[in-house]
Image 1 (cartoon, one colour):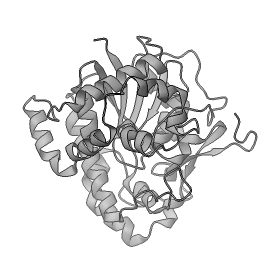
Image 2 (cartoon, rainbow, N blue to C red; image 1 turned 30 degrees about the horizontal axis):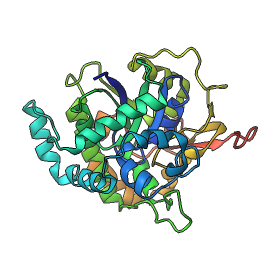
Image 3 (cartoon, rainbow, N blue to C red; image 1 turned 30 degrees about the vertical axis):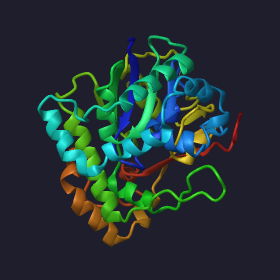
Image 4 (tube, rainbow, N blue to C red; image 1 turned 45 degrees about the horizontal axis):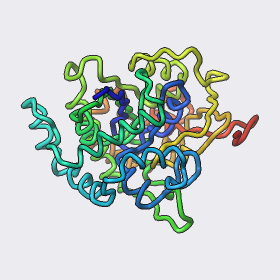
Length: 338
């Protein structure tokens, strides 16, 4: 079986994976797949919009991919994946990893998962050997599962963001894109958001960081990505062995986005045209003092590891850019091109 190169974005939610994935999807030979662990439920069963704007069932690309998966049971795979990747299984997963065993025990569904990535490589990347599938599923156990599948050549991009910014971002009310009566994306309390940030980022380091996966692990702080998006994009591309002749940045902080075919993720994945990469520092003044203290206390050890200060930077200081809630916004010059 030929190898499919997968760049897996690992870490916690609200860490900027949607923007990073969408930008990478503009590079030749890169396919922004979105959160593929949700394909079975949100894409196939619930028929939510593809990044191109069409429901997944109406997207010609995903129709070709799904034609290669006709014997799969989407409902069963979705339910079993959720069970296999539950947080309570993480200690056993890490023990298996330390013993040199596949972190996630095998299952017959793995045949369909491997076939999914092979089908994407064939139909979205025309089978090119240097093609890269960008999967922003984030959950470390799913990345560990992918790494054990036949035919998957896994690279892990660990996207980290200040936990105070992510906790504030989770407080915002954001709907899942799709039907007008859609449910809202989950909004965990700040304490739970902090613990999830700590668990998933620590698990990512335990699975791939340091010398555990030489040449297969790269950590990028999202604050640094926003400060120099072109430089960070070039660095990530080089990490997987690509050297694009041109990057989609007409100016240092403006990116040109065309539609992708990402499944699931933040609704901002639908933005197209010229967009400014903007650091949203609203959390610096918007996150209440008590919430800031709770998140900082729960994540203090990891904060220093990832280079974040304990104290809240002044909103007007240059340091405020590091730890911001980065977003992309339409450029005033060209809104919603294409």
